[in-house]
Image 1 (cartoon, rainbow, N blue to C red):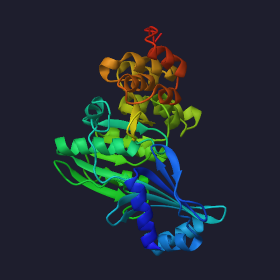
Image 2: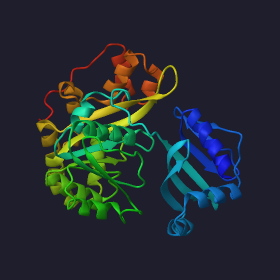
Image 3: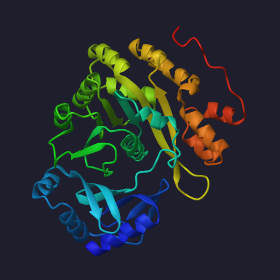
Length: 364
């Protein structure tokens, strides 16, 4: 059985699959350049049982899956690579999603990310949030930013992940990577204890609730740089997503704290390349300048997009501006740009060279 899994993973990696989807009595599917492609191998229950028993060596974790129906872990297939694995049930059967985590951490330039991404990573303190849906490349961008710090600064970096994805090796910086369920019982516990471990940078794999956000906020408030991810589609929506952790009457002080401690929000989605296969990251970047800070404090979040659009000189950009650049550079098609735009009508005009003047009275 293990040999069959090895062959499947080799085939997926060789064809550039980002994910491998395995379900009982159905063809295995690879996600390649955003599309699902099936292969001719159909796993049965015995195959999945054998694979799960091989991957989950800890009896406690196996019991957790059997009781709860979900389990996250990291797995290394010899001579193939590292995978982030989610094992789950579906209609009583077993399923598995395996995300290939590339061992080489790429620089921002080779990922086609704007240079300002590395400038943001150099912040001495504050909160940097990577936003996007599952599979939007948040972890890859975050790893690139951490590696930039590693190559340029002598800092103590603690990562808290579930599971560990990219493996870092000390260069100028000193890394400690903690995996939830193995090295610590929870994100919240690890965050609270991290403040006693003399960190300069704390990376939290995901801010899932108010407890993890409050711990991250405390770390930033005491002079640390905190980097994390949130499931949200745009920079302004990311702020709303965090505020949704709280009841309405609790949100004013949280807005104030966020306005003071936020460094930047980078929202990301992957777009297929026009030629040669692969994807490029369209990114929306909001840097917390005085205008952004004031709008957050006053709860005028609907005006943030206008600020982002008009502050290109500070490294900010909207998704449309990112998509338009890729179209003009011939890296993506106009059709794919339109699909990934929040405002396709505006983008269509922009591609024709028509630009409307931004409203300068954004604070009003």
